Image 1 (cartoon, rainbow, N blue to C red):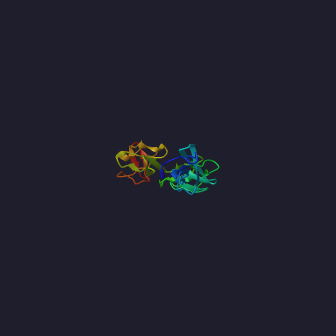
Image 2: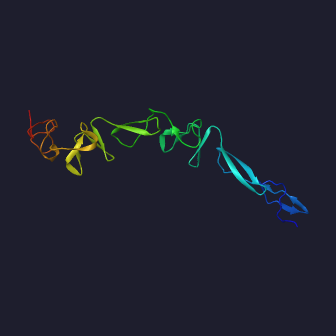
Image 3: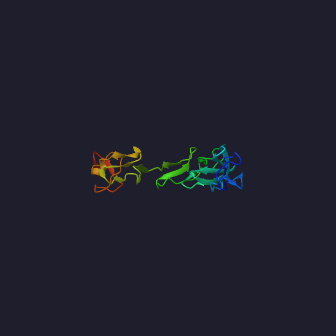
Amino acid sequence: QNGTSCDADGNGCTEDDACMNGACMAGSPVTCDDNLACTTDKCSPISSNSYQCDHKTVSGTCFIDGQCYTSGKSNPNNPCQVCAPDKSMTDWSSAGAGLPCDDGYECTTDACNESGDCAGTINANHCLIQGTCYTKFETNPLNECTMCNPSFSQTQWFESLAACGVCQQGIPCSGGLDCGPDGDCFQGQCFCF
């Protein structure tokens, strides 16, 4: 009977095979197009009435996180990574050490490393503590008795007697003491010379 389903060719990559005037007629080819410019698409029959779609990334391109990229294209979220099909067609690759980047901190000097990350080095006379930049001897806004002292640590607060009103040997006097920032400390007091 016309329109009755049948299997005309034993090919799982055709669909809607149907009887027509006493003969089983092959239907139309299965469409496996994924609408991606960087892939070639192919239907592979599994049986006479089932199939799978195979998608192969085109040479010289990358298919990463559902997007197509041409060779050398930078990761839009990380300038230290590029599409390098000779290394990987499905993951970002390192763009190379030494390339400029920006880690978002004004107190660091930044460059890409071999791992494809933006690595920042804290500048001299600065601290980077809990995601915030501070200059040398700048007081902790949450604790006036601690300060940025790069000689001690560039990533941790330094307990400072000077910040609490008592100067400490080797640290300039500042803030409400007898001397300005050029004073010298002696036995907890600030003197001008």
